[in-house]
Image (spheres, helix red, strand yellow):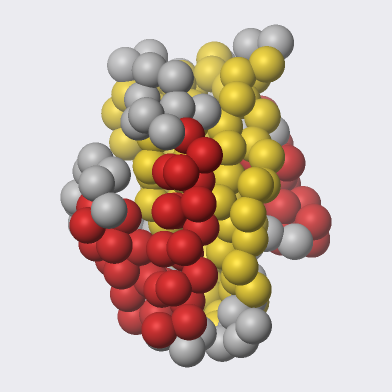
Length: 185
């Protein structure tokens, strides 16, 4: 099973992001947008556990849950606010992947770093890279003209994080929350 730790969003925030994706589709000549229900901000991509990945899937899940709860407790996290900030893209094999940015926030960056460090200490092969918070809205987007998109000016209250599972079903990704930790609990 393929796992990642993420911040999930309210339906209202997802709807605002859908507005940006809808405009992206209108301006694009090819590619695919991320379904509204899949919008999230990835803190740490863990990858495959169990079959073909880490052995001992159940043990690994418990270990990941312990890391999430432990990091949140040690940091004494309370709800905090992040802000959407800009839109960008990067080149992919078949076009560009588009994202809505999130302003850097010391709590957010610290959380991603601590989770990565502790998961690595427990033997997970997490890729270490600079954390650039963003929400992917489209993949392999091809355009004949420059795209003009604007991020909604939104503050987002973050009151917890989730361990998510990613499955491929009928040629699309389906994300399922398998564990969540609310801050201050």
